Image (tube, rainbow, N blue to C red; front, top):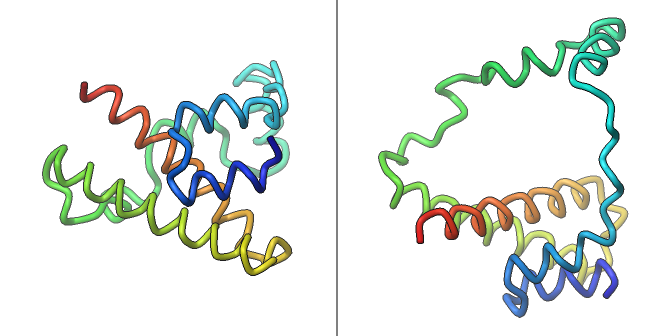
Length: 126
């Protein structure tokens, strides 16, 4: 199955997250086996903040969290809302032939991430 087919099935709700993951695995390149320490060294040499530091803290702190989320039910609602927003945005872009749009990759990535988080959250809450 091609990526555009998968994207449309995600947006329309025809595929579950598990089915999407199975189909998309064939399109995902193998992860580079580079160690985190090696990556940190290369990032520092390039003038970047190292991965280890990025993963220790959220640079936006409390400002990156939605104020309305006070429990798991709120998080579940927020997650469903964000997944729908990004899936709809992505689907519209595909249907309008806007794959070259600057926001296309952002919409695709965010739609996939929210779908994956929602699938794992749902599984964890069973």
